[in-house]
Amino acid sequence: MLDERNGRQRRHGLERPWHPRQVIVVSIFGLSVVCAGLSTALLVPEAHDLCDLVVLASVAMAIAVLFGVMVALFIAVSTADTLATKYPRSLHPGEKIARCRSCNLTVNSRTKHCLCCAKCVEGFDHHCDYLNTCIGTANVRQFRLLIAASIAYLLVQTALAIATLLVSSASSGAKALVALLAALPAMGLMGLFVLAAFQAYIYRTGMTTFEFAVHMSRAKRKKHVVQQHPATKKPLPPSVHLVMLSSTASGPPPPLLLQFV
Image 1 (cartoon, rainbow, N blue to C red):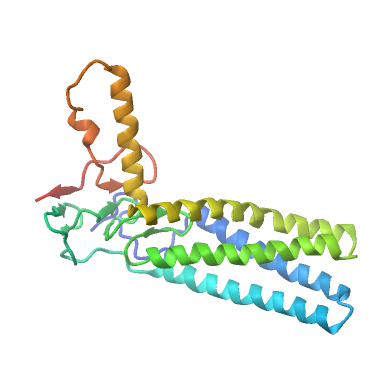
Image 2: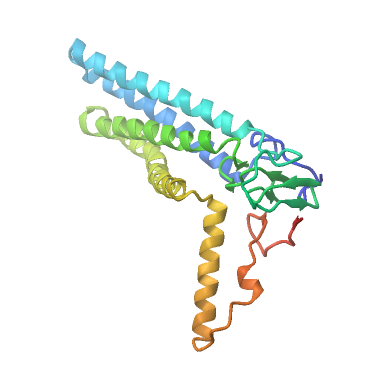
């Protein structure tokens, strides 16, 4: 099974080469840790009694615990074995099976061949550049927990940074550094809220990210055909109903690798 892009199959997300977006995300969370440490240090002098110290220590402990949970989930998602089994583990009544010409596997309808990882992924949801791995049946639950843990961590860390800017009597330079360190994690937090909302939507509808993208593409093509030929009552051409069974990060759609049997 050779990778169509780099000549080999990717085993997991922590395998080199790392994706630039993956490096950026890790760097942003690294900045958040530095920001949390600096914020805590600047707030210690403002703790005038035992109660203040207990509150500050509790917040710092919460940040440490949430960060640990987030790192554990990050590793779990990144190192999960998403490769499809030789034969489908389960089939719905009447469901078609397909044969991947690249992996030489018999798969069900929700298994897709990822060109980035050069392997068939069971329950394929999407290929995540930020984790440098595919999200599928093996790790989608941990992926959603990772989103939730990341939101919780960044919320507490951002709140601590804001409290530092409002309460601390430190120099303006120290406060400016806190604000600078907190900026990127705060923007990442907003992106995570959008991602969480989308994941909640597709979970409720029972779709995967890939199926949602295909659905939107079909709807767009159908609307375009209707606008081009409003008077026709003929069924749409086969190309409109084509569902891509291979995923690619960018560029034109690749040839179909899965052949229904």
